[in-house]
Length: 611
Image 1 (tube, helix red, strand yellow):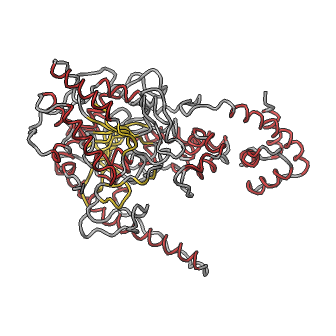
Image 2 (cartoon, one colour; image 1 turned 120 degrees about the horizontal axis):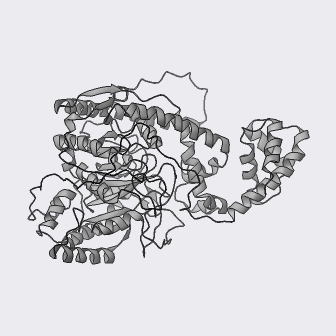
Image 3 (cartoon, rainbow, N blue to C red; image 1 turned 135 degrees about the vertical axis):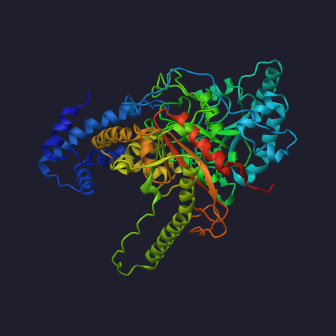
């Protein structure tokens, strides 16, 4: 047993209980060197505290004993799938959820002709493709071959694919054709080709997590989402890229591209699903979001992305980044497509303890959205105040001056882009009012939301602790200040107490935000406002849809360098709008979003690719 009480008594007596000191010392001792008084001095300097000689001997002995326990835990070599014995549950006070599963109510059968060119068919919606297969005007095999050919043709240009699952796909497609002919139609996803973000395990294929060092990793199970889509008759054609360990669009094979501007990255980390869907290379895809990984690439690529309520879709068989924030959801071409996919993948699986055991999703395309209570984050739609002028800084070295100028250029480009994009947000509010939506202004409660993100960083560092300890983090493609290797190392310096304090603050925030949502069925927001952090922390669902395209007069990106992070926006690129819903209130949120989408039609546009 660890001398935990002694350890805490010594630290408390010295007045060090809330400092970074234990983490600093442990980090220093990773090379297996014995903890010494000199280490304590060095750690104290980093922690910004003073420790008298009187306490150093006691600390050395206590910390040595404490360190043995860390080693014993590390020796377990826990798999990424092992979750902690702490569970985040969204605040459900006052939330009414549907608990009885009802029959799926889709929109009326669309008029679509199989005589359309392959190029046009590739961009048809799930609802349209489903009708072609249901009425046997097209076979699952021919549709699968169409998408396989496009995956092969456009992947060299867009780099959205890790593994082509061609053999599995053709076998599934042939089986789908046999069943449909025999009258065993499974529903709207039957025979439709889809792509999985490569953090979902699929038997017999690598599951690389997009990361160097994991290229040959094989997980001998199918993720629950994969199983459920198999059961719906959907056809898995590819495992698609994600930024290394779900960060950005840089993976071990390169940079996944934006089909609207191939000089730009697809954003992250559901980079491959968004790029492949936007390029007409899959009928739909499955992505994941922890803090923007469906929202951002859906925006960049002009897709319709659904981030469901935390605890609606089981994550069993998916890479864990943050057990208390990870969500799986569809990236599609239309809102109803997202509803049809969610209908196939939601609900408990008996393994993911975060999934609500009672909530059900009931899609009704005829739901009267005019009766919904709709708010909008009015301050988020207003112009951001210009930052105050700062005092002139002293003369810098040429290198420092260059960095200042580059940072200033990035800030100016971002301000110009936001000012230009504001007209799309204004037009969205006008359009919503024009179709009969009464918008009520609303604000989110004030909390230090950004500070709570340290929970994500701490959990991610724990999920990949062995990667950091063994030094294998150097195999990851990106090694900058904002990339995982540095974040994982930094998180080792977070005190456990502060993680718990952040969790407590998060509880207060979820309760306060829940009271705001209790007054509304749907809240409309710009995609990249503070709500993105807030609702990922509280677990509320979001629907991101294309909201127009920048014109020739759009401000140029801060950089036009191929694949640069600052290469964002510019003429011809999409913008988005976000609809937020109540916990497990996806059906109402999607109904309103679909009405807006049908009234605008931006989802019908698609990129013209060469290849």
